[in-house]
Amino acid sequence: MLTNIQKRFLRKEAHDIDAIFQVGKGGVSPHLIKHIVEAIEVRELIKVSILQNCEQPKEEVAEMISSRSGSELVQVIGRTIILYKESKNKKQIQLP
Image 1 (tube, rainbow, N blue to C red):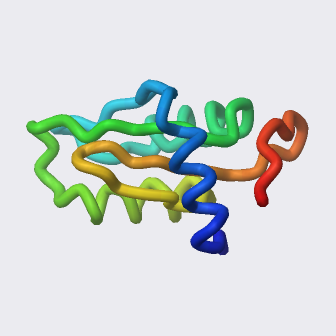
Image 2 (spheres, rainbow, N blue to C red):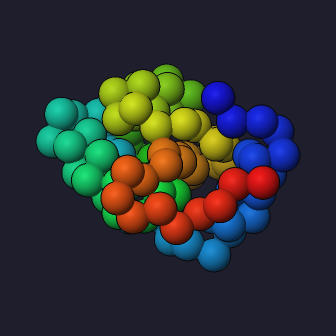
């Protein structure tokens, strides 16, 4: 679990990065989760955007992605989800 101080730090770090995945009408698929797991191992901190045509509530999508990918949900802001998971091999972010 992340502390509030760590979440604040990660939100600041995520400010300048772009969303690299989009969730649309198809929802959260195993294929999408596989790619998110691979990307988060390399980057540690990613953004996922939820498109307008996504039929599930954004909070539900965020919870599904974070639980299935084994990552921490940092924040849901608008239609963007910020996820963090410490990398096993490519540690880049030092949490406070």
